[in-house]
Structures are given as structure tokens and as C-alpha cells.
Amino acid sequence: MINAPEYIKTIKPYVPGKPIEELERELGITGSIKLASNENPLGPSPRAIEALSKGIEGLNRYPDGSAFHLKKSLAARLGVSPDEILLGNGSNELIELAVRTFLAPGDEAISARPSFVVYPTIVQSAGGKNVIVPLKDWRHDLDAMADRITGKTKLIFIANPNNPTGTINTNAEMDAFMNRVPENVLVVVDEAYYEYVTSSEYADSMKYFRQGRNILILRTFSKIYGLAGLRIGYGIAHTSIITEKNKVRQPFNVNSLAQVAALAALEDEGHVEKAKKINEEGKKFLCDELRSMNIDYVPTEANFIYIILRDGNAPELYNELLKEGVIVRPMGSSEIRVTIGLPEENKRFVQALRKIQGK
Ligand SMILES: Cc1ncc(COP(=O)(O)O)c(C=O)c1O
Image 1 (cartoon, helix red, strand yellow):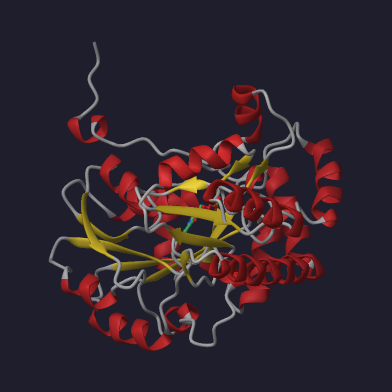
Image 2: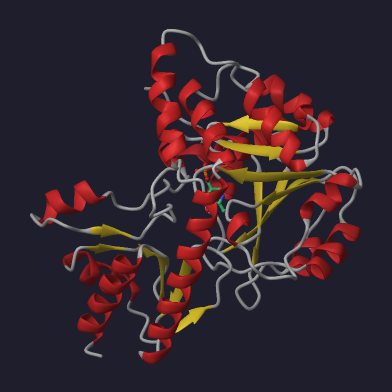
């Protein structure tokens, strides 16, 4: 029998948000809603859908491995060169490529907890050592993270905004942090929820890129662009970093439909604005309702809200909500994360919560 190495055997598998179909099959119910995976409730841009139907005709061909048109469009928008952009099969793949490119077995990677669980999983699967730093007041404790840098540190992951808390780190905090990071460490700033942020203090990661620092900025088409099912994200970094990652990347890692849909979605600024507006309104509604129920939550800069239950009954609440046809994400013994949905979905979540809590 073939045996996986110990560091693979001990990986805790990623648990995705429960799909609607699965819940309905299990409970024999219909009309459920999913507020579990921070997806865009509006759906994809109509322009992306149109581009997809045209793109289908070319499916006998391999995709453009260099994603010429999409990179050109992204580069023009970002004020960078196409050589400073790397596309991935979701930003998840770009996290994986960063680890496979820059971390050798035994090297260390620093990340926070709770944060995006994919970072430590990928580091462990590459035989790396995870250095985990707890959040402070639900935000990345950048001072404590810098304190943990050693001669073996290769990567530092910062989700800004953080998933699952929706919190951000500020310009001042990032400036102080970047001043402490040595030149041989790559800082990965994961900005999957970048487009939703409204705070004027939000750290401008592009500034460090322009200063020539070792930074990899990750963004995605899965969230505000509404294309999670197609799996496409992008990274911005200096060509020296992109060149190394490109050596490790599969030649056709981003499929042709994802490329054409992303290009169309990027151009549909109206759809992005609509998604932002719906998110802001939903955020206000949900936060007002939570306050009126006397339920604690963390103020968010993203499209989800981290709810903290004083009675510590998160798994039970999750199951009760499922029975009401509402799928959220249980995060620990006392926390659930709910994605901000369409107005009717938010109302349905609140109604179910009120019913369960007797409020
Ligand atoms: C912080 C963060 N980074 C990355 C991702 C992955 O996004 P993608 O769909 O682009 O792989 C997610 C998805 O939930 C996320 O929350």
C-alpha cells in the first residue's frame, strides 16, 4: 500500500459551504438560500454571459496560455505591465503557486487565525512549517506577525479584508509592517474582497508594489465579478516573481471561457457598482437587525458578516438555520459567518434567526 507522508495525512480537509441541492436532497425541502460562500448574489454580469455563449464555439481549441487580452485589459486598468500579472484557476491556485515556487520543505510561512484556511493547508501540503499568529481585536496583528519572522520565513499571508472577520488593516499598520519585512520574504496580500471596501484607511498595497517591494497582490473574479464557478483570479507582482511562478504553472491553467467572461465582466462597471450598492444596503440592514436582536458581530468591509454568539452555540444555530432552508457558514464553537445576499435573502435569514432565537 502506498503511504502519503505524515504531513499530508494530518491535513484537515477543506470543508466548502454546503450546496443548496445537497441540503434540499437531505432535508426534502425546496426554496433554500445559500449565504455561505461569499458569492455575488446578483449572478454574473449579463455581458459575461453573452461572452460565454460566443466562447463556447471555440472549445475544441486550447486556451491562450498567456491570456493576452485579459492581461492587457487588467494591466491598463491597474497601471502595470502585462508581465506583472499572473492569472490563476481561482486566486486559490495563485496561493498554491506562491507556495510551490518559493517555499521548500522545512521553510516557514506566517499566517493568521482565524483567516483563510487555504494558506496553512497548502503550506503543510508542501512540507512547510506553519507559524500561526492569532488575530487581535479580530484584525491581523501585523506587529506580532513581524515578530515571528525568522531566517526560515519565506512567505507571509495577509488577507485584507480578512476572511472570516471582514476586517481590514490600515495604511499606517501596513507601512510599519513592511518596514520590518526583510528582502528575502514574500508578502502575499490577498485582496479577494478588495472591491467591497469603503474605508479610507484601507492599506494601498499597490504602493509597495510600485516601491519594488517583495509583494504579491491577489484578487479574484469569484466575488464582486460573480464568476466563482469559472475559477479565475489574478496576481500582481514584479516580473522576477511572476517569471518564477510561471515556470511552475500549468501551461493552460485558466480555461478559455473563464478568460472571455472575466474580460467582459471587467468592462461591465455598472454591474460591479450594482453589486457594491446591494452589498452596502444589505450590510446596513443586517447590522441594524443584529443590533436590535442584541447579537454581537464584527463590523465588516467585505460582503459577509462574522457573528459572535455569546452562548457559544454556533453548530446548533447552523443546524437550526439549515432546517429553515438557510445555509450559512459555521466557523467555530461561537461564530457563524453569513454572506450578505439579496434584500429578500437577508430578510429570510433575519426571520429564521428571530424564529430560532425567539426574538
Ligand atoms: C480571502 C480569500 N482568498 C481567496 C479566496 C479564493 O478565491 P478564488 O475563488 O479566487 O479561488 C477566497 C474565497 O473564499 C477568500 O475568501
